[in-house]
Length: 195
Image 1: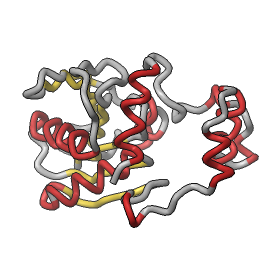
Image 2 (image 1 turned 90 degrees about the vertical axis):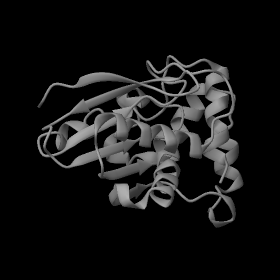
Image 3 (image 1 turned 180 degrees about the vertical axis):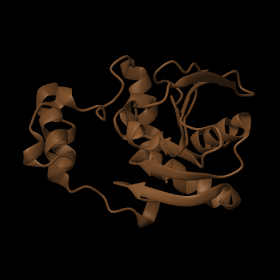
């Protein structure tokens, strides 16, 4: 396993994106875009499996991990522009792009706006949003809105993992960045639910 290099990429609006890079400098790039309200920790474990072959690139979205950014609306377009800025700053012309959940929407925007940058597009548990999305059924929506945090986490475990994996949400890295404030989490709901 190679060492993870931590870099920072500045944006015109004052945002300072924290970026994590591992793997061979000359290897093909693999950009990993995680789900809503999650930092680069989402990819711990999966990144490790690819960084011997690929130059893996992860980033903390605005409001997550160590990224700092001005308040304001988040959109999938803004997050896709951030991802392109990261690639540009690293001197990466093309990358394999793997997006999951909200990161899948960001990946689709990135691929649509910058197709020449995308070597391949891998999408997991995501949709394009808008009129082409398949909405959750009302039972799932209610379960995810349960005010009891333990009940919400149990629903998430049931939705994302097989019974063989177990039912301990503490084992997972995909249930959000625990350092985020509730206001930051609310900001992340908007791009995740918009087209």
